[in-house]
Amino acid sequence: QKELRKQEQKKGTIIVNEMRIEARFGRNLRFLRKERCVTQTELAERTGLHQNYISEIEHGKRNITLRVMENIAMALGVQEKEFFNERE
Image 1 (cartoon, one colour):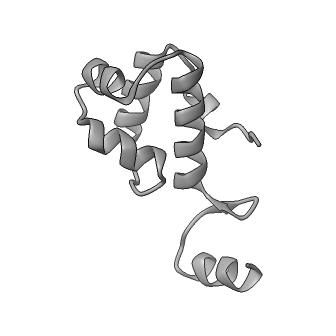
Image 2 (cartoon, helix red, strand yellow):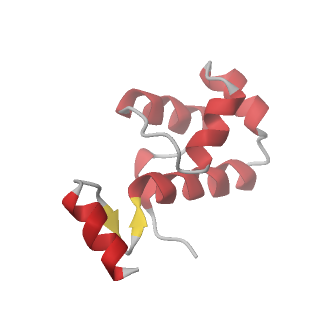
């Protein structure tokens, strides 16, 4: 695990608490979306994004722009900083 973290840091990937930022963002997005009883399809409709794209974000497979993050936050009624909170 530590070796993997060192390799990723050399590649320029930002890691906080041994979790890639994309993965943490995605996990928090999923938590916040479900907490508000919103489906991926509903979120896609609210944001103008495709449902598959929302799924890929939640699985940490996408490195989204700040504009997309802002759009998702507005659609869920949350502040952007909530996507970066540490949750278990």
